[in-house]
Image 1: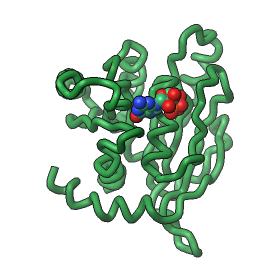
Image 2 (image 1 turned 180 degrees about the vertical axis):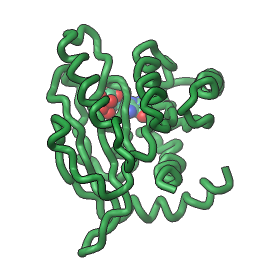
Image 3 (image 1 turned 45 degrees about the horizontal axis):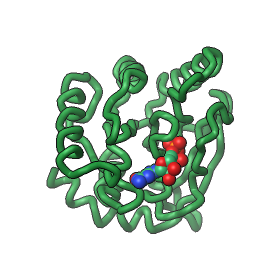
Image 4 (image 1 turned 30 degrees about the vertical axis):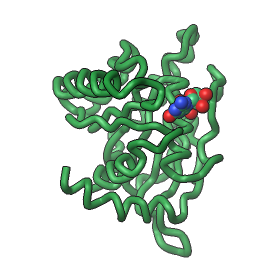
Length: 215
Ligand code: GDP
């Protein structure tokens, strides 16, 4: 973990600098060229992904808070760092939320196609951060996504969200249970990051984890 502690300050600086929306990709043909390292964010609808991306980047409107099941399924790309003619340090990829109640099978299928298309052979994708609601822990639909990532051999890390909503003892228990499950998965990072977009818990560590992921 000492490596990651060393990255806290460089990561803070990186995320305090330029961050710009690059494009939305509703299908493979729209993906940007694979020119820079990418770190993706995935999670169930309402897990707090938009809030976390906004906290991570210190910008309120970067990721739209959703709460609209069935809204357009697209990957959103953001350039982090660079600017003024310099290339970005990395790209954040906001994946469409999955697993909302009553999603029609066609929508679920479309999500799988889009994500599998993206995962397949995307060498620049360095890691996916899979967000898990700290109140609920890992759900079956999260396991399906973890299995997709294991299968595609895309490294991923589990990040607990909304940590402020539960007691410290419960957070410790869910963190431990989540880590135990992560250790059994082939492509999962063994360490869990607990975050809160409200209180800011874990945000510096998450920034460092993004920087660490691009190695
Ligand atoms: P998304 O669908 O995954 O993008 O989730 P949102 O970011 O839109 O968040 C869903 C709901 O959870 C919203 O009402 C947020 O205000 C709330 N929320 C998100 N993150 C946190 C958090 O860290 N703490 C608390 N208390 N609420 C949060």
